[in-house]
Length: 616
Image (tube, rainbow, N blue to C red):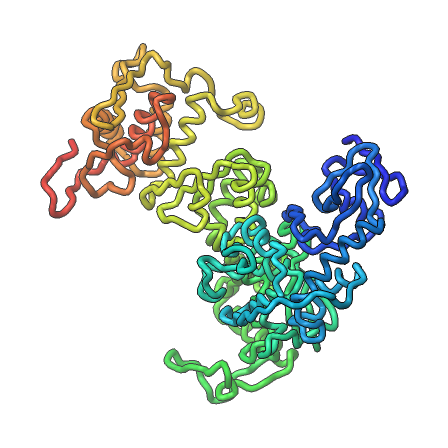
């Protein structure tokens, strides 16, 4: 347990934890200090630019921002001194002068007005700045009214440091300084991904959800209750609070859950309007008599009553059950099947499969997640004996190295991607993305491996080979927890058998014959050939593939995994381009291209329109 720091706050001796600020200590003890540019939420660093939280420290000439200052042992702090209160009052008056009157404000319920009341400021002695800022209603989900902006910087930190989208920034100078989107574009024309983090952070109403505003850019909807829930979209598990007005969701706010820490994506924050969509079915419908099903027939979702009529739940369920029983009686249980949905809970999935197995009497039950998650479940079951994830997404911030392959988190799981971006931005974690296509996370990546489509298995096998043969794995850990593992010197290349030569920018490697082996085949190569033969990629051409790989290494050519039907072409500086491995691993090129050469050992076809280059 870390040592506490004892100091005096408003005449009372208190204790602070290491890294805790004066403002945090005061809040914990029930002392309210006004603040505007500081957001007491996960991922937001204190900035100290609004100067609304100033406190007086004995022995210091100037006041200190409590959101930034950490106490020291024996420090005497006063948050209620006349000097501190006058300073905070002056700051609030200056900010209040440029705001519309509260009754005419874009959001009369904004945090700014609450902090002004806390500071005891209702009016300002100062003249308002003459400014005319046009509203920006260009975005379909958010509204921008910079006449209410106090330039606290919260939206900038929300966009650039929390969600790491780098859209919002400060531009221009002096009294012309303002918040901009990209190169001073409108919000709707910018690269904004509509995560809404800036809307949730803004304390003045300069950024607001469009669902709460009217055409005059004023708040028109005030929720009458709040409901805590989970986002219904992907499986990250973001916690959300829905604001409800007249039993209709009008806004969504991120909640501090373990998976999202107040963050949401565009779907979680703004994708709730489908609930009240007029096309949504809210009552069971039964097909009308005489309206037979036809492949060319179409139903207008706005008016389904041309083909259906409303029915009670009892009638609809009886009709569906009767139809299923008739099929089972006529064609047997195997004629029935069930297909589950990822939108249901674990309990609902269990009940559904129980219905199919015991009610239908059929084992034909499947789930949509199997199509995308089956391969990862198989690997997790084999490696960890559990198909569940081994760590939360936030654990990315504790990693030293992150590799993404076969996934596009910024599109499929945007909130999870924010933790990866945080790790890169804050801790300079090395991120490697292996994907034939560039994705939005690629700009944060240390290296992007744009491998040929279909060659991901060869790439991973080569990487695993390096880990084992270079002794980068924990051999004791593997021997203790895995079966049939052969690690140690038997799987490693003796460095004496390797020579490194560079010609014309192509790194070429030669290996002398291994002792006791006439054809210089070491155990790991035999094992690799067996693995490749198991999946039917090499078959009876193992030896020719091995010889071919050696020949191409000598000739400065490589056989790429996706080019099984093409001739070979020289690729300069391939180590640096694809694998980024230097001379510190002198046999790496031999390993990886020999391995890939085996996979494509049977390739003998020509590339149309090019001279013949026979692979013998």
